[in-house]
Image 1 (cartoon, rainbow, N blue to C red):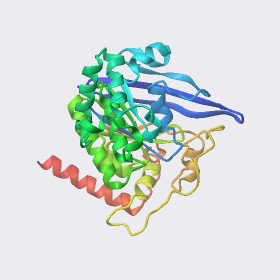
Image 2: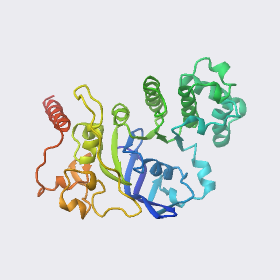
Image 3: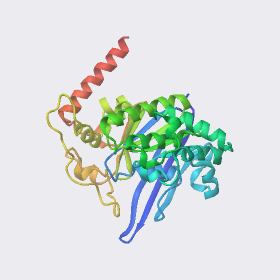
Length: 348
């Protein structure tokens, strides 16, 4: 059985605003196993970043955790003080942010910024830390590292800056790496290089990763498991194959249907806008945008129905009493491919 490194249970987070209390995260639960990558996907504003920031204790001042637990080695991270966070943050749990320039100090040499966590958390000498920083710069693919270790952030390209941020995050070999859309600002070629780099370094240091993205295409080659998030809730979760080839929630259908494929000639968008979380809906939060919605979707949130041992979805369409609906053609094509994959696996 896989070793569990993180267990998030019934997390609830509100934001205090002039308009009232925004119910940003509503009863979210998930776990992370050692060495695996969990991707959390969903549209902007679905609560992905807020969830991960709560894991590293970096919520905004107007945010308030109103319920739940984040268990890390038997310790509830929601109960610890800032002094304890300073020992954990950057050491046992590290984070890569979307824009590397906001993470790097423009006045400090790159070598110093990479070495600093080792000096602070591991008690390394400056000489030892700089030697390790140089080694890490080479590991993340920065050419001429011996010369560039003394340069400043503005002297590097966007892709190279993101490599430096990854080096800083991984220098202490953390157990958990939180990656919040780390490739969004990069072009496709550099994006692929960064993703390959993260996978390679993950194998080397056995780090578990929570990868935040709105791009399902990025997830395919990166994650082991996927959680689909919408309006502060998880609507479906499973393995990559479960979500890509056997999706069950209409919101997941919409996300997949909006991805470009070789077979599709047009991209489908999801109509409508997310609900107002000042006054969250009673039922399925996606119901108002869901052309497959049943009457009960507007009145009562569905439980998580078990699709398989690894796959669960919160949709009344999985209730045995629900009418059968015909999903988009792309989803039907994926279902057929999934059935064929399962048949091939059972025959081998």
